[in-house]
Image (tube, rainbow, N blue to C red; front, side):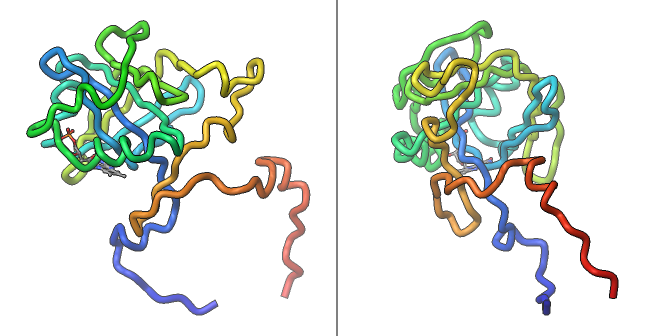
Amino acid sequence: MEKVHLPPKYRYFAAPHPAVVIGTLVHGKPTYNTVGDFGITCANPLHIYVASVKTHYTNQGIHEHGTFSVNIPSEGQLVATDYVGAVSGHSTDKSAVFDHFFGDLKSAPLISEMPVNLECEVLHTLLVGTNEVFIGTVTGIYAQKDVMEGERMDIERVNPITLFMDSSYRTIGKPVGTAYGLAAQFRPKPSP
Ligand SMILES: Cc1cc2nc3c(=O)[nH]c(=O)nc-3n(C[C@H](O)[C@H](O)[C@H](O)COP(=O)(O)O)c2cc1C
């Protein structure tokens, strides 16, 4: 297969990002910031990272309290999710965009409308380029009852949003296989 050699630019980053909303308290009020730069740093025990530009208003609250929330929006919360990613708390009070509640960590506001909320304590802060990367220990997860089937979380009911480098938001597609299960179908290429 012929390839073109491209520069290391975001516009060629073809993998999906999750679109999630970070919550913190700044000056005692909730504030929110959408990030695509979010992922797992350790699955067990569960640790995650979020990368937020150093100058973002949200970062102040994370530094002040050492905690933050990560809230997973459904398609139904997409407009508000885009809004809190388009305006800054430096100039706009975003505290009333969502209803919130507190879990065990009293300084990490969790978004009531969103189906899944993670509360996190900062474990490490790294500087990478213009970002602060907050690596967080997930201390608790809250899920709306209607996305749960007993102990199992139904991802179709969560209906999370993915974000791509062409700025498109997309919902999840159809399942195309089972992790670790498909491996049984693998056949090595015949030797040349
Ligand atoms: C879909 C989407 C994804 C974003 N991803 C990030 C991100 O990963 N990191 C980041 O620093 N900013 C990201 N932003 C931009 C911030 O959300 C935006 O600058 C916001 O206004 C910062 O708010 P704050 O200053 O109140 O913290 C994203 C925005 C959108 C709409």
